[in-house]
Image 1 (tube, one colour):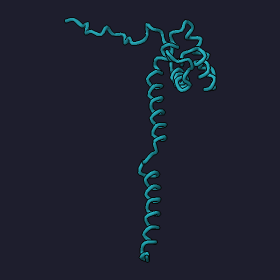
Image 2: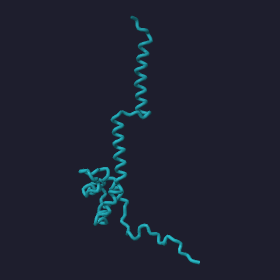
Image 3: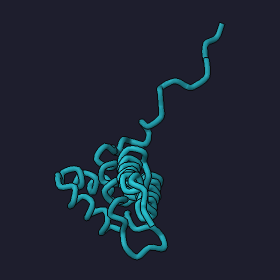
Image 4: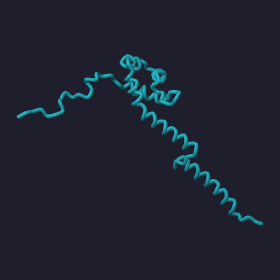
Amino acid sequence: MRVPVWIKPAVWGAVFGAVGIMIVGFSWMGWTLGHTTARLVAEGRESAMITALTPFCVSNYMKQPDAVKQLALLKEDTSSYTQRDIIEKAGFATMPGNKEPTSGLGAACAIALKTASLADPERRGTSGGGGANTTTK
């Protein structure tokens, strides 16, 4: 049996075309493998959890008895590792049901606490006005 002359170039063309389509698909068209998708979903889930729980971490940190002193100590420290470690050791980055703290939550809480302030509760949310128009005619 004789193989037509055009078969060999056609097979090589199909092989190179398939390789080219895979390169373009994975590089520019956003194709992913199953393990990559699973990793991206896990990262997104953890990021959403950290975003949702950071306010609770900050709130719990501010509720401790010596919050002013502890916040000043935290802001004095310039090492983000040490700040995260302080929050994790105090238990603010450990969620109920978990035995270990979440380092991402500890880091996010430390960043949020850097900008936090302990203003007098009487001064928060008051604008000086009574809220109602008190002018009389």
